[in-house]
Amino acid sequence: MTYKIATRHNLNILLNHSECDPDFTVHVYAPRHLIKEDPTCEALRDQHQKFYILYVEEDWIAHHYVTDVLDHYSWPVVTITSGADLVAHWDGYRPDMLALIPQLRAQYAKEAA
Image (tube, rainbow, N blue to C red):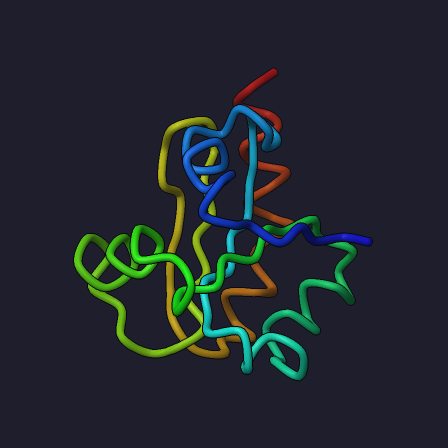
Protein backbone atom coordinates (compact mmCIF):
# COMPACT_ATOMS: atom_id res chain seq x y z
CA MET A 1 0.00 0.00 0.00
CA THR A 2 1.37 3.41 -0.93
CA TYR A 3 -0.85 5.58 1.23
CA LYS A 4 -1.82 5.99 4.87
CA ILE A 5 -5.04 7.38 6.26
CA ALA A 6 -4.45 10.29 8.59
CA THR A 7 -6.79 10.78 11.52
CA ARG A 8 -7.30 13.49 14.10
CA HIS A 9 -5.09 11.47 16.43
CA ASN A 10 -2.08 11.38 14.12
CA LEU A 11 -2.58 14.64 12.19
CA ASN A 12 -0.24 16.58 14.47
CA ILE A 13 2.41 13.89 14.00
CA LEU A 14 2.02 14.07 10.22
CA LEU A 15 2.11 17.85 10.10
CA ASN A 16 5.25 17.80 12.21
CA HIS A 17 6.69 15.14 9.86
CA SER A 18 7.97 12.84 12.59
CA GLU A 19 6.37 9.80 10.91
CA CYS A 20 6.88 11.04 7.37
CA ASP A 21 9.83 10.91 5.06
CA PRO A 22 11.93 13.77 6.46
CA ASP A 23 12.99 14.82 2.98
CA PHE A 24 9.78 14.58 0.94
CA THR A 25 6.14 14.04 1.90
CA VAL A 26 2.88 14.19 -0.08
CA HIS A 27 -0.45 14.84 1.68
CA VAL A 28 -3.87 14.67 0.02
CA TYR A 29 -6.71 16.50 1.76
CA ALA A 30 -10.27 15.70 0.66
CA PRO A 31 -13.70 14.60 1.81
CA ARG A 32 -13.92 10.83 2.29
CA HIS A 33 -16.39 10.30 -0.59
CA LEU A 34 -13.93 11.73 -3.15
CA ILE A 35 -10.88 9.62 -2.34
CA LYS A 36 -11.79 6.18 -3.70
CA GLU A 37 -12.29 7.21 -7.33
CA ASP A 38 -10.20 10.38 -7.28
CA PRO A 39 -7.88 10.72 -10.31
CA THR A 40 -5.27 12.50 -8.19
CA CYS A 41 -4.97 9.55 -5.82
CA GLU A 42 -5.01 7.15 -8.76
CA ALA A 43 -2.12 9.05 -10.38
CA LEU A 44 -0.15 8.97 -7.13
CA ARG A 45 -0.75 5.24 -6.82
CA ASP A 46 0.31 4.74 -10.45
CA GLN A 47 3.55 6.60 -9.66
CA HIS A 48 4.04 4.34 -6.62
CA GLN A 49 4.21 7.57 -4.65
CA LYS A 50 3.75 7.21 -0.91
CA PHE A 51 1.15 9.71 0.30
CA TYR A 52 -1.00 10.48 3.31
CA ILE A 53 -4.76 11.07 3.10
CA LEU A 54 -6.50 13.49 5.45
CA TYR A 55 -10.31 13.50 5.51
CA VAL A 56 -11.27 17.14 5.89
CA GLU A 57 -14.87 16.60 6.94
CA GLU A 58 -13.68 14.56 9.92
CA ASP A 59 -10.85 16.80 11.02
CA TRP A 60 -11.33 20.53 11.48
CA ILE A 61 -7.57 21.11 11.84
CA ALA A 62 -6.91 19.68 8.37
CA HIS A 63 -9.87 21.61 6.94
CA HIS A 64 -8.64 24.85 8.54
CA TYR A 65 -5.12 24.30 7.22
CA VAL A 66 -6.14 23.93 3.56
CA THR A 67 -8.92 26.53 3.54
CA ASP A 68 -7.66 29.25 5.86
CA VAL A 69 -3.89 28.82 5.70
CA LEU A 70 -3.39 27.63 2.10
CA ASP A 71 -6.57 29.31 0.75
CA HIS A 72 -7.84 26.31 -1.27
CA TYR A 73 -11.54 25.54 -1.60
CA SER A 74 -11.65 22.79 -4.25
CA TRP A 75 -10.88 19.15 -3.53
CA PRO A 76 -8.56 17.41 -3.38
CA VAL A 77 -5.77 19.62 -2.06
CA VAL A 78 -2.26 18.23 -2.45
CA THR A 79 0.70 19.47 -0.45
CA ILE A 80 4.32 18.49 -0.87
CA THR A 81 6.79 19.17 1.90
CA SER A 82 10.49 18.70 2.28
CA GLY A 83 11.41 18.65 5.93
CA ALA A 84 9.51 21.59 7.42
CA ASP A 85 9.34 23.48 4.10
CA LEU A 86 6.19 23.62 1.98
CA VAL A 87 7.46 22.85 -1.54
CA ALA A 88 4.22 22.94 -3.52
CA HIS A 89 0.46 22.89 -3.07
CA TRP A 90 -2.52 22.89 -5.41
CA ASP A 91 -6.16 21.95 -5.56
CA GLY A 92 -8.10 19.84 -8.00
CA TYR A 93 -6.81 17.30 -10.46
CA ARG A 94 -3.58 18.70 -11.91
CA PRO A 95 -1.77 16.20 -14.16
CA ASP A 96 0.92 18.81 -14.85
CA MET A 97 1.77 19.09 -11.14
CA LEU A 98 1.49 15.35 -10.55
CA ALA A 99 4.01 14.78 -13.35
CA LEU A 100 6.48 17.05 -11.53
CA ILE A 101 6.49 15.02 -8.31
CA PRO A 102 9.31 12.64 -9.33
CA GLN A 103 11.45 15.62 -10.42
CA LEU A 104 10.75 17.45 -7.16
CA ARG A 105 11.61 14.33 -5.16
CA ALA A 106 14.92 13.96 -7.01
CA GLN A 107 15.73 17.65 -6.59
CA TYR A 108 15.12 17.62 -2.86
CA ALA A 109 16.97 14.31 -2.44
CA LYS A 110 20.04 15.93 -4.01
CA GLU A 111 19.73 18.98 -1.76
CA ALA A 112 19.42 16.79 1.32
CA ALA A 113 22.54 14.79 0.41
